[in-house]
Image (cartoon, rainbow, N blue to C red):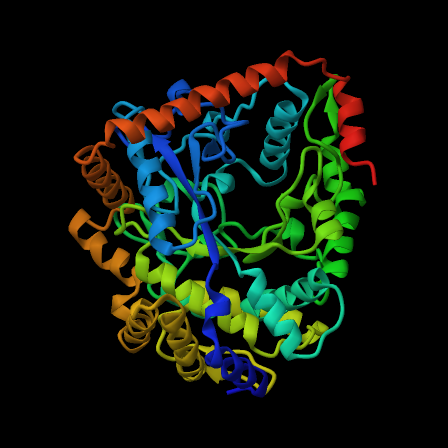
Length: 519
């Protein structure tokens, strides 16, 4: 065990109560699909409220890509309970449609059949839709329909103050939190290959998704495309990754470097996007012709975050007030779990994140930064290959050996969190993940491929069956009337909020964009 981690565990072991008050929230994406499994062409149901102003039910890229957002909760059970309520409410108001429960999408048809999310006529609503139109022109709309679940996690102020005092840091607390949070970000990137192995559940995709595109996957007679040892095609070069950002350098060594690099990308023209043009025949095509339109266009396994204020960009919030929480973004939807994530996975993610935070986290150099995406691609494409080796500073090493050493370091972290929350859930979750390492057939990716056999090797039929089964399970458990009415009132209020916003005077859209990006 590294000395930094051992010291941190030692002082936390004396008084683990300072970790009480951890907060977590979930953001789950899911495509609305028709009964036949094709992407819904219907607008976002009015009963679900305004996608612009509802705090918990919105859309991501497409009008058919629902995003369910829990508030920050002081327990995993609370966060999952919120997510369960949101699902039950949504299913009560989408008729015969289903929510697709796999990360890789349903049958989509041509790009133009994927409807962009609509947010109304206000300037901010127009900008949100324009951003998505630009993404479609830059990367294609299909890539944007891939779904995942994001795990947001923050640590309580008493913990930060105690840790700062323990290490003898006399600077501003916000600076200390940001420095240590960026250390978490770096370690998460270093070790994320383990999460891709354990929580990846997208080793196959419907052949229609990659029609006309080079992919290198194997084909089943059903038309399904897959790789026999893949873990998460969602996180491969076929999914969220893209060539346009391959040369984009965003440093995670300090918060200032991270913010500066993102801001520079938002302001630096990029020739292929200039060729698209910001306007065509007087109609906006994208927000700008720069490397990134906005910060969220930068894809990453993890993001440092700060809640924004009205008219404030994410990088401005981070620069002004520092890191508030981290967003863990590399988790596939689990098609065997109605909510898309299990309690065990949630507990394990918190163990993993705390280990990343407490461990020594030296700054990245160029050699290590170049190594990270190669290890990621090796894991997503062939993670269950018994002979897989990953690159390290000491040369190639067997994945299984690296994972076993990391699991051993996670054990005292799990025991610490058990003590904090008076439970055995963290240690039990870790034990389950260790079993997956020893028996890869227990991983979600292996279970998906094994399940395909029951559907003639057809990913689409398997995924459609999962969606049907999940819909039936939620409809069997309607919300209590009081809770349903609470969520209905929230939806109605969000519609009123959007109407009030749109009734306000709006400055010219070009001026709005200029003001939004003003330094």
